[in-house]
Image: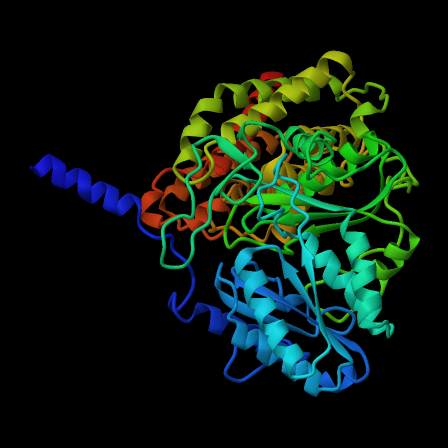
Length: 593
């Protein structure tokens, strides 16, 4: 019995409603609408209804007003498209529920009473929306209102749509924009209906989802097998399932192939030479990075078919709560359609599109100057070349030997890759040494190593070492490379690290090993003849002691600063690496004596 009870509790936990940042499932729609209008000076809320209106209704006098709406959960649709040049009002239902006809009628009458010459209802092809908007339209006509309705049904999912017809999806937003531009220009209700009805024949939409969404307070709206993607939306029925490992290029090609397949009754006729406006619509939970990748895929796929991408919208336009997925909407566009798309609007959710055709434009800028890499330049050897060559070899071998130890130290306070990043730098230097002579000028050598670690080491460590070496380079030349000059160079490098890195001694970073050593090396400027080696030995000891002491310091910079001090009890790996490098240099110099 306890086994069955445990299983019951497990499944009860597993199928809990998804967490959402709301106050309550019952109030979320009303609070969301209130949040929208409070944040937008151009919007107002019709008291007693879930109706959002333009706050400047007086500007509708003599013009056709546009009304749309539907279930909530698809934000920014539809209220986000209210403004001059788009919708005049929007009616919201509950989450994924059609708005009641009483609220639709109230919105129509508000627009009519504001002096609108007529009211156009833009309705997505769902039974509830058609019924409720249709009923309100009939009631309004009985009260003498000039009202008409356009049904948007541009879904390309099904080869043989049912009697209910194709669904209305994100292509609705295009109709909002086109009809809104025509209304703003003073076109009549009949003219607008005729124009957008014709344009609707050239619009198609298809979506793909990686995960379901869930209505507030409810379980996920549908099940999606792990590792699959659903093509077709929204879980009730789907065109196909794709493996989730499919690339963005493959998914987009599959979508466009299906949308334009002539054997499908709901396909969008599209041929080479056609111009299109494209909408890449985030269904709610895709990252901006993913959206940019999909946008690239869509442009490349369409252009490979000879289709001209005239305009591109990419972002959140008609979502499904937190669904991870994307829909593609294509609209064939002539010059007149593009003119209407480009017309100005104050609607907050409409993007600021460029009016330049995207296909055919130059989108790569060639650099005006070529950045020369110091490691690619030819150098001549000098008296210091042999010892500097040995020092580099020793540093590299020491860091490679310490790779696993540094990784282990870093796992306690960072990403666990400190040893790997230092090893990458060491191998890059070793490879460079095999094909190049070590320049006799220390400044040139430091610049070379700075370039190598910047390019090969990566991360913050690469930037810090490169900063150090770059700042130090100007203080040592072939004619000025005595011990005092090297001390000055190291001090300059350390100051650059502190300036740009934001850390200081005591913050549990590599500076806790480097700064004590540099403070000791400054004594080289006043060291007696023959006393240089003693100063160097003392500096290396200071570095080792500083690195060891970091185990007792609280991290105030770097990734370790985000971790509880109770979990960090080992020396800082960056400080240990610095102590290792200085020790390697000392061993080479001692070997010369």
